Structures are given as C-alpha cells and as structure tokens.
Image (cartoon, rainbow, N blue to C red):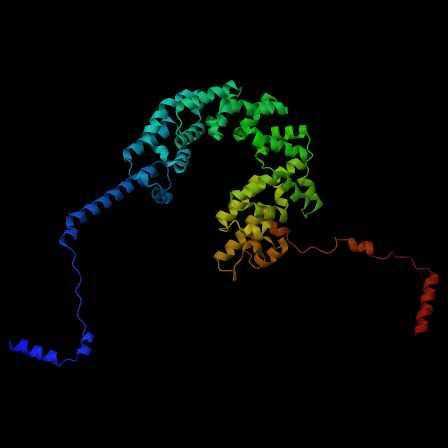
Length: 460
C-alpha cells in the first residue's frame, strides 16, 4: 500500500501537458489458436511439393530419353503445366505409339510434340491408331501422318472424315503422290467442301492449263487449294495481264513455279519498281533480267521472304536488296548460309545487314570465312586493340584488309588462305606499257651532226 500511495503522489505532481510525451509500449496482436498452422499442414505442403518435383523430374527424364534436348525441357514443362497433372505412364504409352505404331522419326516426333503438346493424349492416339489404316498407302509416310495428327487434334477431326476426303481427291483425278503432298502440306483440305474443291480445280482448266499440269501444280504447291477463286486467284491473274504479261507467259510461269500464286496483289509490281530503281552496274542489271521481268520480280519476292524469315520487316528487306543488288543474283541457299554464319558463328544480329548490306554481296568462301578467321584469331590472342565490327570486316578492299590484319602477323597468312599470295600492289599501267610512250628514234645524218656542233659552239 505504501508503494501504491507513493506512485499515486508521483503522478499527481506530473504536468498534465507532458502526459502525451510518455510512450506506452504496444504489444503485438496474437492470432487465435485456430489460425496457427500446425505441423501436420506444413508436412502436407512439403510432401506435395516434393511429389510435384519428383514427377517433373521423371517426366523430364522420359522426354529426354525420347530425344528432347535437356536445355529446353524446363521451359517446355513450364509452358505446358497440364503435362505435370497427367499420368507419366500414359505419356510414355503415347510416345511409344507415335514412335512405333506411326513410325515417326525421332526428330519428327520431337517437332510434333513441341508444336502440339496435346498430341500426347492417349485416348486420341489409340483412336487414330485404329483409324489410320483407312488411309491406305498414305499411312506409310511419317510426315503425312504427323501433319494429319496435329491438324486433327487441333480441330477435333475423326479419321473417317480424312478417309472420305482422300476418296474425293482421288475422284477429282489427283495421283497418289499429289494426294500425299496435299495432306502433308495442306491438311486443312479436309475442311473444304467437295463442290468448292471441284470449282477451284475447274478454274485452271478454264484458264487453259491441262489436268496433268494442274496435278503438277498441287504436287509442288499444295497450299493453292486454300486459295478461293473469286477473292484470290482471279484478281491475281488479272493483275498479271494488266501489267502487260501475256496469257501464255503467265501459264508457263505458273506451271514452272506454282509458288508464284503466293504473291499478294500489288507485290509483283512493287518488286519490278525496285528493279527499275536499282543503281548498279549494267552487267548486274542484265543478269537480274536475263530470264525476263516476270521471273526477276518473283526472284526479288523470294529473297524478301527469306530475309523476313530471319526477323527483318519487309521495308528493311527491300532496302537491303536495293542497296546490294548482287544478292538478287545469288541462290537462296547461299543467302541462307551467309545469314546462318552471321547469327551462329559471328554472334551478330540480323539487323546488322541493314547497316552493312554488302555482306550478302561478297563471296562466302573467298572473303567472309577467311576474314572472319583472321579477326577471330587476332581477337583470341589479344592482337586487336579495338572492337572490329561487321563493317570493318566486309568494307575494306582485299589489299587494305591484308595490309591491316594479315601482313603484320605472319601466322595469319595461312588463315587468310591462298588469296594472300594474290594480294599485291597493282601498278598504274600494265608492265611494258611505257614502251608505247617512248618517242621513236631517228637515225642521225652528217648534216644533223654538223648543225648540232655549230649550235654548241655558239653556246660556248
């Protein structure tokens, strides 16, 4: 009680204004006992995570055993999480059906599963395992089977529908090889009505193309079956005629290269305008137009598509061809090999071609590879004190590149190859040309000597 009285007297002496300055400690709020997780729930969540992790590991091992690259498995499983909820044994059975029953090669199997992971549905594959026999000899082609399976899974199409489609195509006069090409390249033919198919085929007969040539067109480019007559084929052919090309020429070019029909309206006209605006040597222009304007314009379109496949937009692709016309005369395989070398070996972006389009115009084996080998060797040895870009490799002449990077380092002579021995300073005139500029020599007569003697005596 004495302590209580003493404390009460102390508080009476305090100033009321200073009471707010006294800090009162705050204690944390306690959760009710029902909200505190017990050890059993912790163990349950950990066990679920461990089982999920073990399932992911087993699924990754299964896919890797069938040829899937280990570096891409994590991203693949993360993107397709429904596979983690599937039965691993059923997925293994599905892989066995694709590999053994449908006889898909390993690379084709991996590509199919990457493009359409839902193809691993065991019920779907068992249904098609029975129905694939209705296709007859077409079921022996793994690529045809792969294309049909992917399209059927995406759009839920039964095997009977493809069987009736094959019978329709045979009734229209297509050969087995052409039907196989159509099912592989354009499996969506199963969605087109029989009357519409007949209408699209009769259009070519109306144009003047025989049935054998029509079969050849669809064998080479089966995607033509997806083009409607009124909205695509007729306007395109009318555009060719309006540009001044004759009917016979158009028919011959379509039969020779059916992919001409993949041109958009106005695209051929723009390609020909680009050729007309080229600033190049006359020999290059003649080589571009050597097979006619029609083929020249289509050659530009094919190379633009090639550049766009690597990530460039059409405007930049047209600009590259305009600034480097030599690339129009090169084969597509040569252009693709140069771009692959640029991306994989040189580790550069495809946008570098916008700044250095000359890269596509120089020789791959004689200039690109030897120069890159020299630069890479000097870079690995620390012989370069600055960064060497694509422009520094391609733009210098053969003599300048030799004097800068090869001549100071004798060990680079072998890397530069046999071309180093041809690099030498060219004379301004060919050897022996000075003889033609030497004044002719005339025989001196006695009278000339007498005149020369008198002239010298006068000087003295």
